[in-house]
Length: 414
Image 1 (tube, rainbow, N blue to C red):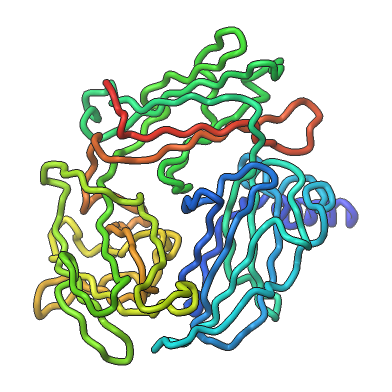
Image 2 (tube, helix red, strand yellow):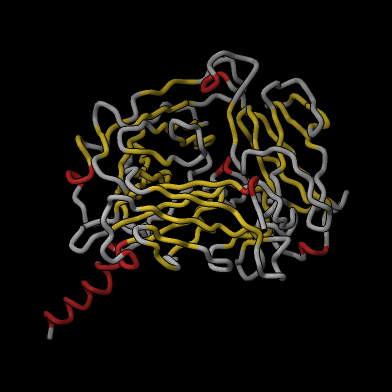
Protein backbone atom coordinates (compact mmCIF):
# COMPACT_ATOMS: atom_id res chain seq x y z
CA UNK A 1 0.00 0.00 0.00
CA UNK A 2 2.81 2.40 0.83
CA UNK A 3 4.44 1.91 -2.58
CA UNK A 4 1.08 2.45 -4.33
CA UNK A 5 0.61 5.67 -2.36
CA UNK A 6 4.05 6.87 -3.43
CA UNK A 7 3.22 6.14 -7.08
CA UNK A 8 -0.02 8.10 -6.78
CA UNK A 9 1.83 11.05 -5.28
CA UNK A 10 4.30 10.90 -8.17
CA UNK A 11 1.51 10.91 -10.75
CA UNK A 12 -0.36 13.74 -9.06
CA UNK A 13 2.51 16.08 -8.38
CA UNK A 14 5.40 15.18 -10.66
CA UNK A 15 3.75 14.30 -13.95
CA UNK A 16 1.89 17.63 -14.37
CA UNK A 17 5.27 19.36 -14.41
CA UNK A 18 6.08 17.60 -17.67
CA UNK A 19 2.78 18.63 -19.25
CA UNK A 20 2.76 22.24 -18.15
CA UNK A 21 2.01 24.73 -20.93
CA UNK A 22 4.96 27.06 -21.41
CA UNK A 23 3.39 30.50 -21.16
CA UNK A 24 5.50 33.58 -21.70
CA UNK A 25 6.79 34.95 -18.40
CA UNK A 26 6.71 38.74 -18.16
CA UNK A 27 9.75 40.70 -17.09
CA UNK A 28 10.23 42.41 -13.71
CA UNK A 29 9.98 46.19 -13.52
CA UNK A 30 13.71 46.78 -14.01
CA UNK A 31 13.76 45.10 -17.45
CA UNK A 32 12.36 47.22 -20.28
CA UNK A 33 12.16 47.46 -24.07
CA UNK A 34 12.39 43.76 -24.95
CA UNK A 35 12.86 43.54 -28.72
CA UNK A 36 12.64 40.02 -30.15
CA UNK A 37 12.49 39.49 -33.90
CA UNK A 38 13.79 37.59 -36.89
CA UNK A 39 15.51 38.78 -40.06
CA UNK A 40 12.33 40.40 -41.39
CA UNK A 41 11.92 42.60 -38.29
CA UNK A 42 8.50 41.19 -37.38
CA UNK A 43 7.52 41.42 -33.72
CA UNK A 44 7.48 37.62 -33.40
CA UNK A 45 10.28 35.47 -34.88
CA UNK A 46 9.09 32.89 -37.43
CA UNK A 47 12.25 31.58 -39.05
CA UNK A 48 13.62 28.70 -41.06
CA UNK A 49 16.40 26.61 -39.53
CA UNK A 50 19.66 28.53 -39.78
CA UNK A 51 18.09 32.00 -40.02
CA UNK A 52 19.03 34.43 -37.23
CA UNK A 53 16.88 35.77 -34.43
CA UNK A 54 17.73 38.79 -32.32
CA UNK A 55 16.93 39.51 -28.68
CA UNK A 56 17.62 42.85 -27.03
CA UNK A 57 16.55 44.32 -23.69
CA UNK A 58 17.49 46.97 -21.13
CA UNK A 59 18.05 46.72 -17.39
CA UNK A 60 17.32 50.16 -15.93
CA UNK A 61 19.02 49.24 -12.66
CA UNK A 62 22.23 49.73 -14.72
CA UNK A 63 24.08 47.26 -12.51
CA UNK A 64 25.75 45.29 -15.33
CA UNK A 65 24.19 42.13 -13.96
CA UNK A 66 24.96 38.83 -15.68
CA UNK A 67 22.11 37.25 -17.64
CA UNK A 68 21.92 33.73 -19.07
CA UNK A 69 19.70 32.14 -21.70
CA UNK A 70 18.13 28.69 -22.07
CA UNK A 71 16.17 27.24 -24.97
CA UNK A 72 13.19 24.89 -24.56
CA UNK A 73 11.63 22.88 -27.40
CA UNK A 74 7.84 22.53 -27.21
CA UNK A 75 5.09 20.56 -28.91
CA UNK A 76 2.05 21.92 -30.71
CA UNK A 77 0.25 22.71 -27.45
CA UNK A 78 3.34 24.49 -26.01
CA UNK A 79 4.13 21.77 -23.51
CA UNK A 80 7.82 20.70 -23.43
CA UNK A 81 8.55 18.02 -26.02
CA UNK A 82 10.10 14.65 -25.24
CA UNK A 83 13.34 15.56 -27.03
CA UNK A 84 16.61 15.75 -25.14
CA UNK A 85 18.62 18.95 -25.42
CA UNK A 86 21.13 17.17 -27.63
CA UNK A 87 18.33 16.21 -30.02
CA UNK A 88 17.23 19.78 -30.73
CA UNK A 89 20.43 21.77 -30.05
CA UNK A 90 23.94 21.66 -31.46
CA UNK A 91 26.15 22.93 -28.68
CA UNK A 92 25.17 23.98 -25.16
CA UNK A 93 22.78 26.67 -23.94
CA UNK A 94 22.67 28.16 -20.43
CA UNK A 95 25.33 30.59 -21.64
CA UNK A 96 25.96 34.12 -20.39
CA UNK A 97 24.95 37.00 -22.65
CA UNK A 98 28.30 38.65 -23.38
CA UNK A 99 27.18 41.49 -25.66
CA UNK A 100 26.17 44.22 -23.23
CA UNK A 101 27.03 47.81 -22.47
CA UNK A 102 25.85 50.81 -20.49
CA UNK A 103 23.89 53.71 -21.91
CA UNK A 104 25.59 57.03 -22.42
CA UNK A 105 24.33 60.63 -22.59
CA UNK A 106 20.97 59.55 -21.09
CA UNK A 107 19.10 60.89 -18.08
CA UNK A 108 17.94 57.35 -17.30
CA UNK A 109 20.98 55.06 -16.97
CA UNK A 110 20.54 51.48 -18.16
CA UNK A 111 22.49 48.42 -19.26
CA UNK A 112 21.64 47.14 -22.73
CA UNK A 113 21.93 43.44 -23.62
CA UNK A 114 21.95 41.86 -27.08
CA UNK A 115 21.84 38.21 -28.15
CA UNK A 116 21.83 36.57 -31.59
CA UNK A 117 20.87 32.96 -32.32
CA UNK A 118 22.42 30.85 -33.77
CA UNK A 119 25.87 31.72 -32.41
CA UNK A 120 29.19 30.02 -31.67
CA UNK A 121 27.74 28.24 -28.62
CA UNK A 122 24.41 26.94 -29.85
CA UNK A 123 22.46 26.18 -33.02
CA UNK A 124 18.96 24.75 -33.52
CA UNK A 125 18.60 21.33 -35.14
CA UNK A 126 14.87 20.72 -35.58
CA UNK A 127 11.74 22.71 -36.38
CA UNK A 128 8.87 23.37 -34.00
CA UNK A 129 7.80 25.65 -31.18
CA UNK A 130 10.55 27.10 -29.00
CA UNK A 131 10.83 29.15 -25.85
CA UNK A 132 13.84 31.26 -24.89
CA UNK A 133 14.24 31.88 -21.16
CA UNK A 134 16.41 34.59 -19.59
CA UNK A 135 17.81 34.05 -16.07
CA UNK A 136 19.77 36.34 -13.76
CA UNK A 137 22.95 35.37 -11.89
CA UNK A 138 20.87 33.87 -9.05
CA UNK A 139 19.24 31.58 -11.61
CA UNK A 140 15.87 33.29 -11.22
CA UNK A 141 13.75 33.33 -14.37
CA UNK A 142 13.38 36.94 -15.51
CA UNK A 143 11.30 36.54 -18.64
CA UNK A 144 10.64 34.20 -21.55
CA UNK A 145 9.51 34.57 -25.16
CA UNK A 146 8.11 32.19 -27.73
CA UNK A 147 9.45 31.73 -31.25
CA UNK A 148 8.84 29.35 -34.15
CA UNK A 149 11.23 27.45 -36.42
CA UNK A 150 9.93 25.78 -39.59
CA UNK A 151 10.95 23.81 -42.66
CA UNK A 152 9.51 24.96 -45.97
CA UNK A 153 8.08 21.62 -47.11
CA UNK A 154 4.40 22.29 -47.88
CA UNK A 155 2.87 25.40 -49.42
CA UNK A 156 0.13 27.36 -47.67
CA UNK A 157 -2.19 29.74 -49.51
CA UNK A 158 -4.58 31.97 -47.57
CA UNK A 159 -7.17 34.72 -48.05
CA UNK A 160 -9.29 36.86 -45.72
CA UNK A 161 -13.06 36.96 -46.20
CA UNK A 162 -15.94 38.83 -44.62
CA UNK A 163 -18.04 36.74 -42.29
CA UNK A 164 -21.13 35.11 -43.77
CA UNK A 165 -22.85 35.37 -40.39
CA UNK A 166 -25.03 38.51 -40.54
CA UNK A 167 -24.46 39.05 -36.82
CA UNK A 168 -20.74 39.62 -37.49
CA UNK A 169 -20.59 40.68 -41.13
CA UNK A 170 -19.23 44.14 -40.18
CA UNK A 171 -17.05 43.11 -37.24
CA UNK A 172 -15.30 39.82 -38.06
CA UNK A 173 -12.68 38.58 -40.52
CA UNK A 174 -12.50 34.96 -41.66
CA UNK A 175 -9.24 33.26 -42.62
CA UNK A 176 -9.60 30.59 -45.31
CA UNK A 177 -6.59 28.62 -46.53
CA UNK A 178 -5.29 25.47 -48.17
CA UNK A 179 -2.21 23.31 -47.66
CA UNK A 180 -0.60 21.81 -50.76
CA UNK A 181 1.50 18.84 -49.75
CA UNK A 182 3.06 18.29 -53.18
CA UNK A 183 5.47 15.35 -53.00
CA UNK A 184 5.29 15.22 -49.21
CA UNK A 185 3.24 12.15 -48.33
CA UNK A 186 0.37 12.56 -45.88
CA UNK A 187 -1.16 9.19 -45.02
CA UNK A 188 -3.71 10.35 -42.44
CA UNK A 189 -3.77 14.17 -42.55
CA UNK A 190 -6.58 14.56 -40.02
CA UNK A 191 -4.33 12.99 -37.38
CA UNK A 192 -0.88 13.90 -38.69
CA UNK A 193 -1.49 17.59 -39.44
CA UNK A 194 -2.49 20.36 -37.04
CA UNK A 195 -2.67 24.09 -37.63
CA UNK A 196 -2.52 27.29 -35.59
CA UNK A 197 -3.88 30.60 -36.90
CA UNK A 198 -2.54 33.77 -35.26
CA UNK A 199 -3.73 37.35 -35.71
CA UNK A 200 -0.99 40.00 -35.49
CA UNK A 201 1.35 37.53 -33.71
CA UNK A 202 -0.90 37.72 -30.62
CA UNK A 203 -1.02 34.21 -29.16
CA UNK A 204 -3.90 34.60 -26.63
CA UNK A 205 -6.45 34.81 -29.48
CA UNK A 206 -4.87 32.10 -31.67
CA UNK A 207 -7.15 29.39 -33.09
CA UNK A 208 -6.09 25.74 -32.74
CA UNK A 209 -7.33 22.23 -33.51
CA UNK A 210 -9.06 22.95 -36.81
CA UNK A 211 -9.16 19.80 -38.99
CA UNK A 212 -9.18 20.06 -42.79
CA UNK A 213 -12.69 20.55 -44.07
CA UNK A 214 -11.99 18.26 -47.02
CA UNK A 215 -9.11 17.05 -49.21
CA UNK A 216 -8.52 17.34 -52.95
CA UNK A 217 -5.79 14.90 -53.87
CA UNK A 218 -2.73 16.13 -51.95
CA UNK A 219 -4.40 19.45 -51.01
CA UNK A 220 -6.01 20.09 -47.61
CA UNK A 221 -8.78 22.69 -47.74
CA UNK A 222 -9.93 24.87 -44.82
CA UNK A 223 -12.90 26.92 -46.04
CA UNK A 224 -14.63 27.46 -42.71
CA UNK A 225 -16.54 30.53 -41.64
CA UNK A 226 -17.20 30.68 -37.91
CA UNK A 227 -14.44 28.24 -36.92
CA UNK A 228 -11.60 30.39 -38.36
CA UNK A 229 -13.01 33.87 -37.70
CA UNK A 230 -11.47 36.70 -35.68
CA UNK A 231 -12.87 40.00 -34.49
CA UNK A 232 -11.36 42.70 -36.67
CA UNK A 233 -10.61 45.19 -33.91
CA UNK A 234 -9.45 48.64 -34.98
CA UNK A 235 -6.20 50.27 -36.03
CA UNK A 236 -3.86 50.94 -33.12
CA UNK A 237 -3.16 54.44 -31.87
CA UNK A 238 0.43 55.63 -31.99
CA UNK A 239 3.00 58.17 -30.85
CA UNK A 240 6.59 58.93 -31.85
CA UNK A 241 9.24 60.28 -29.47
CA UNK A 242 12.32 59.92 -31.68
CA UNK A 243 12.83 63.68 -31.26
CA UNK A 244 12.75 64.47 -27.54
CA UNK A 245 11.93 68.14 -27.97
CA UNK A 246 9.39 68.16 -30.79
CA UNK A 247 5.63 68.08 -30.13
CA UNK A 248 3.50 66.40 -32.78
CA UNK A 249 -0.10 65.89 -33.77
CA UNK A 250 -0.56 63.53 -30.81
CA UNK A 251 1.86 65.10 -28.28
CA UNK A 252 0.39 68.21 -26.68
CA UNK A 253 3.38 69.34 -24.63
CA UNK A 254 6.80 68.29 -23.33
CA UNK A 255 8.28 68.96 -19.90
CA UNK A 256 11.75 68.21 -18.56
CA UNK A 257 11.79 66.94 -14.97
CA UNK A 258 13.91 64.00 -13.81
CA UNK A 259 13.16 62.62 -17.30
CA UNK A 260 11.47 64.10 -20.34
CA UNK A 261 7.68 63.97 -19.95
CA UNK A 262 5.52 63.75 -23.07
CA UNK A 263 1.83 64.53 -22.59
CA UNK A 264 -0.42 63.00 -25.24
CA UNK A 265 -3.66 64.63 -26.30
CA UNK A 266 -6.53 62.76 -24.66
CA UNK A 267 -7.90 59.91 -26.75
CA UNK A 268 -11.51 59.20 -27.69
CA UNK A 269 -13.79 56.19 -27.88
CA UNK A 270 -14.03 54.76 -31.39
CA UNK A 271 -16.44 51.84 -30.98
CA UNK A 272 -19.40 53.99 -32.10
CA UNK A 273 -17.61 55.99 -34.80
CA UNK A 274 -17.17 55.16 -38.50
CA UNK A 275 -14.03 53.23 -39.30
CA UNK A 276 -11.07 55.35 -40.40
CA UNK A 277 -7.92 53.81 -41.84
CA UNK A 278 -4.52 55.04 -40.83
CA UNK A 279 -1.35 52.92 -40.99
CA UNK A 280 -0.15 51.07 -37.92
CA UNK A 281 2.28 48.24 -37.16
CA UNK A 282 -0.35 46.06 -35.50
CA UNK A 283 0.59 46.79 -31.90
CA UNK A 284 4.36 46.76 -32.34
CA UNK A 285 7.08 49.32 -31.68
CA UNK A 286 10.42 50.46 -33.07
CA UNK A 287 13.12 51.99 -30.86
CA UNK A 288 14.71 54.99 -32.59
CA UNK A 289 16.24 58.39 -31.73
CA UNK A 290 17.48 61.53 -33.45
CA UNK A 291 19.73 62.35 -30.49
CA UNK A 292 22.44 59.70 -31.12
CA UNK A 293 23.93 57.20 -33.53
CA UNK A 294 23.70 54.04 -31.37
CA UNK A 295 19.95 53.64 -30.92
CA UNK A 296 20.28 50.74 -28.49
CA UNK A 297 22.44 52.64 -26.01
CA UNK A 298 21.82 56.32 -26.68
CA UNK A 299 18.02 56.37 -26.84
CA UNK A 300 16.51 58.13 -23.82
CA UNK A 301 13.69 56.93 -21.60
CA UNK A 302 10.75 59.32 -21.38
CA UNK A 303 7.52 59.32 -19.40
CA UNK A 304 4.40 59.19 -21.55
CA UNK A 305 1.15 60.55 -20.10
CA UNK A 306 -2.07 58.98 -21.42
CA UNK A 307 -5.60 60.26 -20.95
CA UNK A 308 -9.00 58.74 -21.74
CA UNK A 309 -12.29 60.33 -20.63
CA UNK A 310 -14.21 58.15 -18.20
CA UNK A 311 -17.24 56.51 -19.79
CA UNK A 312 -19.97 54.45 -18.18
CA UNK A 313 -19.10 51.48 -20.41
CA UNK A 314 -15.92 51.15 -18.30
CA UNK A 315 -18.09 50.59 -15.23
CA UNK A 316 -15.67 50.07 -12.33
CA UNK A 317 -13.49 47.70 -14.34
CA UNK A 318 -9.75 48.04 -14.86
CA UNK A 319 -8.41 49.87 -17.93
CA UNK A 320 -4.92 49.32 -19.34
CA UNK A 321 -2.68 50.84 -21.99
CA UNK A 322 -2.03 47.84 -24.22
CA UNK A 323 0.66 47.01 -26.77
CA UNK A 324 3.74 45.01 -27.68
CA UNK A 325 5.89 47.49 -25.70
CA UNK A 326 5.47 45.20 -22.65
CA UNK A 327 4.32 42.08 -24.55
CA UNK A 328 0.65 42.95 -23.95
CA UNK A 329 0.94 42.32 -20.22
CA UNK A 330 -1.57 43.90 -17.82
CA UNK A 331 0.55 45.26 -14.98
CA UNK A 332 0.23 47.98 -12.39
CA UNK A 333 2.58 50.14 -14.43
CA UNK A 334 0.29 50.32 -17.47
CA UNK A 335 -2.97 50.35 -15.52
CA UNK A 336 -4.97 53.60 -15.70
CA UNK A 337 -6.26 55.46 -12.65
CA UNK A 338 -9.27 57.70 -12.38
CA UNK A 339 -8.61 61.40 -11.79
CA UNK A 340 -11.64 62.89 -10.05
CA UNK A 341 -10.51 66.47 -10.75
CA UNK A 342 -10.85 66.20 -14.52
CA UNK A 343 -12.89 63.03 -15.03
CA UNK A 344 -10.09 61.28 -16.92
CA UNK A 345 -8.57 57.85 -16.78
CA UNK A 346 -4.82 58.50 -16.69
CA UNK A 347 -1.54 56.58 -16.84
CA UNK A 348 2.14 57.55 -16.73
CA UNK A 349 4.44 54.95 -18.31
CA UNK A 350 8.18 55.07 -19.15
CA UNK A 351 9.09 54.29 -22.77
CA UNK A 352 12.37 54.18 -24.61
CA UNK A 353 12.44 56.68 -27.47
CA UNK A 354 10.75 55.41 -30.60
CA UNK A 355 7.52 54.79 -32.50
CA UNK A 356 4.87 52.88 -30.53
CA UNK A 357 1.43 51.44 -31.16
CA UNK A 358 -1.07 51.16 -28.33
CA UNK A 359 -4.75 50.89 -27.52
CA UNK A 360 -6.95 50.70 -24.44
CA UNK A 361 -8.34 47.41 -23.14
CA UNK A 362 -10.72 46.66 -20.29
CA UNK A 363 -10.33 43.90 -17.71
CA UNK A 364 -13.81 43.05 -16.48
CA UNK A 365 -14.66 42.14 -12.92
CA UNK A 366 -14.89 38.44 -13.85
CA UNK A 367 -11.31 38.50 -15.18
CA UNK A 368 -12.14 38.48 -18.90
CA UNK A 369 -10.24 40.90 -21.15
CA UNK A 370 -12.31 43.02 -23.53
CA UNK A 371 -9.80 43.94 -26.21
CA UNK A 372 -12.05 46.17 -28.29
CA UNK A 373 -14.60 47.76 -25.97
CA UNK A 374 -12.98 51.19 -26.42
CA UNK A 375 -11.73 50.94 -30.01
CA UNK A 376 -14.51 48.84 -31.58
CA UNK A 377 -14.52 46.03 -34.16
CA UNK A 378 -14.51 46.59 -37.92
CA UNK A 379 -14.10 44.15 -40.76
CA UNK A 380 -12.09 46.77 -42.69
CA UNK A 381 -9.26 46.80 -40.11
CA UNK A 382 -5.81 45.91 -41.45
CA UNK A 383 -4.59 42.75 -39.71
CA UNK A 384 -1.86 40.23 -40.49
CA UNK A 385 -2.60 36.52 -40.16
CA UNK A 386 -0.08 33.68 -40.03
CA UNK A 387 -0.87 29.98 -40.40
CA UNK A 388 1.52 27.41 -38.89
CA UNK A 389 1.33 23.82 -40.16
CA UNK A 390 2.45 21.17 -37.66
CA UNK A 391 3.18 17.55 -38.52
CA UNK A 392 3.70 14.43 -36.43
CA UNK A 393 3.93 11.04 -38.08
CA UNK A 394 3.21 7.84 -36.17
CA UNK A 395 6.15 7.18 -33.84
CA UNK A 396 7.61 10.71 -33.99
CA UNK A 397 8.77 12.25 -30.70
CA UNK A 398 7.78 15.83 -31.41
CA UNK A 399 5.60 18.13 -33.53
CA UNK A 400 7.57 19.60 -36.41
CA UNK A 401 6.49 22.61 -38.46
CA UNK A 402 6.46 21.86 -42.18
CA UNK A 403 4.99 25.07 -43.58
CA UNK A 404 3.97 28.64 -42.88
CA UNK A 405 1.45 30.82 -44.68
CA UNK A 406 0.46 34.43 -44.25
CA UNK A 407 -2.17 36.84 -45.49
CA UNK A 408 -3.40 40.35 -44.76
CA UNK A 409 -6.91 41.74 -44.51
CA UNK A 410 -6.06 44.58 -46.89
CA UNK A 411 -7.21 42.16 -49.58
CA UNK A 412 -10.44 41.19 -47.77
CA UNK A 413 -13.30 40.13 -50.03
CA UNK A 414 -16.86 38.94 -49.70
